[in-house]
Length: 212
Image 1 (tube, one colour):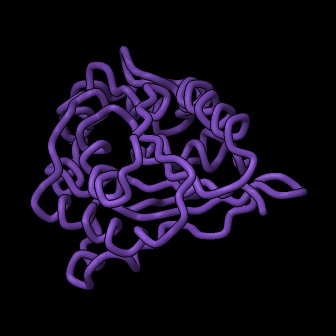
Image 2 (image 1 turned 120 degrees about the vertical axis):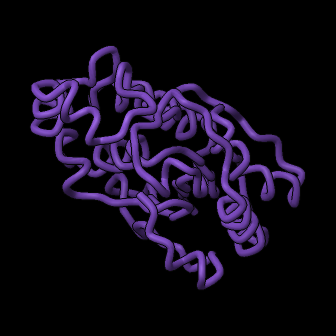
């Protein structure tokens, strides 16, 4: 056996529907988002889970909660799994940011690995904090299935880091829709991506909701 980490993006929020910058903000799941969380729990409750980790943001906690309750597994919260901090852009739309922070936005879009939103985080900083959680999991669990419930940018950056993809290209190379699942297997030759952005665990009408 080997270790597998299941990266689950949280369910739908009002920001994932309408767009806008939401990192440090802490919105709840929408009714559809709650159904997404339950859909995951219903499908994966038969999987033999070793541990469940989650970002402390309520949208991630609420996504992990149905599975934790079904299996009576304690959720382990880690700040390293939080979403990218958007600083002064929090709560603003893309159009507002383009108008108010034109140069900063261009720099961030061009090279997010090293150019953060004003007061926010770079891809490198996110990879650094998230990698500590991955290292903890690898140290504590040599085998088994570990669920990590996190956020759009953070999951994409973690996957880039594990797979050797330029951290500045995380938006260009990987996409994870709301409540989508990606699986990485840690085997003889290192991390192997087995599944990317899967949503078959969702009811069909929710599976077709693209979100952001």
